[in-house]
Each structure stands twice: as structure tokens, then as C-alpha cells.
Amino acid sequence: MSPLAQAVAHYREHGWARIPALAPLETLERLRARANEIATGRVTYPGLFFQPDTPTGNYADLAFGQGWAGPDVPYRKIEKLEKDPEFWAWLAGEQLRALVAEVIVGPVSLYRAVLFSKAPTTGSDLPWHQDAGRFWGLSRDPELQVWTALDDAPPESGCLEVFPGSHKLGLATPLGGVVPTARVLEAQADEHAIRVPAAAGDVILLHNHLWHRSGRNRTGNIRRAFTVCYLPRDTRCLRKKRDPRVFVPVFE
Image 1 (cartoon, rainbow, N blue to C red):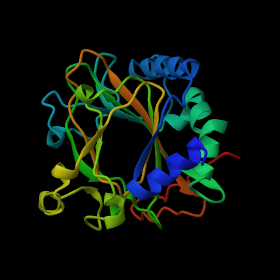
Image 2 (image 1 turned 180 degrees about the vertical axis):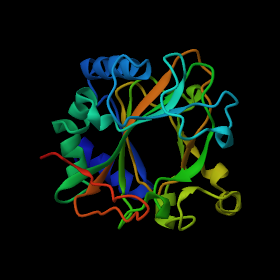
Image 3 (image 1 turned 90 degrees about the vertical axis):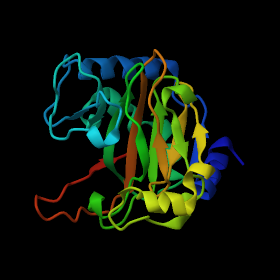
């Protein structure tokens, strides 16, 4: 089996897989530079979503709907990065095209393109959760997220932690999102957790039903990752309170 086929086989069995050093250094340098420019407001696009991190490190203390709050604010999440040509070039490039084609058969669209960040010596604890369910408002749950490490993510920086094989359990709740404490205890998720450290340039495949979490950054270095969720083209938005979302085609 090729390294790509091996990674996809591991992803299907365990819900995650790591592909070392897939993103070249020149790509990382461009994405890091653009991430800095967007976070500090030097580059802007209409409709970008910003979520400042919480100073307490507690996920429950996160505020929503604040938007961009200034150049010196540590942002936990910056969303809709498909609007930026540098991030688009990576998420729609040939390397990820070949990878996605191994998982999604047929035409592909984009659900989201997000920068997740943990500032030095801070960042929030992200509890066990699944990136799917009724909260996402889709005609079917997506299955593939591609996580690219822009910086080194050792265990002490709050690297990804996963509950291997949990994607086979389905949704913990119909709503999705954070896994209730009772389900965590019942499944003994903490006992089964493994850390997935990454070096800058590594790519990690994640199944949307996989239970995963991350801790605080206890290092003096920023920890950023660019996460892209891909969909089969025929997936539809079911929300009714606002106009349904139209998902951008990728790999045209």
C-alpha cells in the first residue's frame, strides 16, 4: 500500500491518521504570515468569523458573536478562510485533492475552513466533542476533516487527543458537539485517550464522529492548525431560520 492508502486505511479503522510533512515549508511560511496578517487586521475580508480565546482557559467561558476585537487579542478561532487566496491554494491544491479523493467519491464542496490557535502559555481546554450532528444542520453528517499543523504541536502545547475508534459509536447525542459527561464516563474515554502530537507540516485526518479534544498551551510558542471540512457535493443545508448555506465547490 502507498503511504496515502495506509493513512486512509488507518483513518477508516481508528477515526484518525497522521501524514507526516505533507505541507512544504514554503506553504507553511505563507500560511503563517497570512494568519498573522488576518489576526492583526492588516488583511481583511467581508464575513470573516473571529472568536477570541478566554483568559480563564475554561471552554464554558468562551464568548460568542464578538467578531474581530483588535490586533492584540488572542483568537481561538478564525473561520471562513476560504476567502483568502493563500489558504484556498492549500485547501484546494493537488496534494489535498488526492487525499480527499481517497475518502469522498465524486464532486466535493467545502463546509468550513478554520484556523484554530492556542496562544503561548494560554489557550482553552477543549472538551471531548464530535464535529457533526443536528447542530451542523446538514442533510447528512460529513466524515472528513483535514487538520494541517502550521506550528509544532507537542503534547505540552495542547496537541490533539483522540478516542480511537469512537467514530464507530455514532453520535453521542443527536445534537452533536460536546459529549455529555455521563457518556464520557460510560465510554471510559479518558482511559482510552491518546495524544497525537504533530510537527509543523504534518496533516491529520479526522472523522467527524471521532471524539477528540485538546488542552491548554503550556509552552512559550503559539500553536496553530488549519482545519478544513469537506463534503460530498450533494450535501444540503437544512437550516430554516436563515437562508440555507450554499457550499463552495472545491477541486473544480
